[in-house]
Image (cartoon, rainbow, N blue to C red; front, side, top):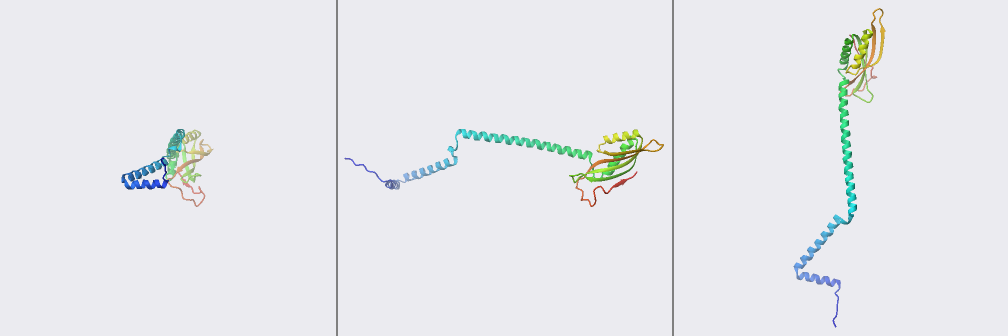
Length: 219
């Protein structure tokens, strides 16, 4: 009668170790196999192929594609807005250079323009005075008030007003008073006008109310 027997688990380990001691190649195979198994486990942990089904991965890819499209659309809109801002800035600078006289040269420049328009219209220019004040919200732009006196007939005055309207210096008539001279048929005309000036640097804080100082020019 044959007998069966079982070795305890720890006995098997002892036997395997004993065999490995007898066969170094077997020991090397055991070590290499253990390292390979550890690497496989680490790779599975890092890659996590069980993290989502193909449907989940497809949804994630679709979401990423939508995000990319949204970012591209936002970038395109930002570039378009930046181009419009640059265009507006350029046009604004051109407007200022064309219609706003430079602060230091504004009085003689504006006076010369008024004299030119008056002479072309047949009006006789007389005294002028200039005063200025800052435009609210800006420390480099000013509104200049010009008070001028002229002499001429009614037709000359109409041409003078039309000339001011066509002037590239952007001169605005605020108030006009005309009184006839006795026995001459001419008019004494007093005009209050506005023009605009610009400066490269902000004005210093005034020590007295803006517009208090005036520059008078007589002819």
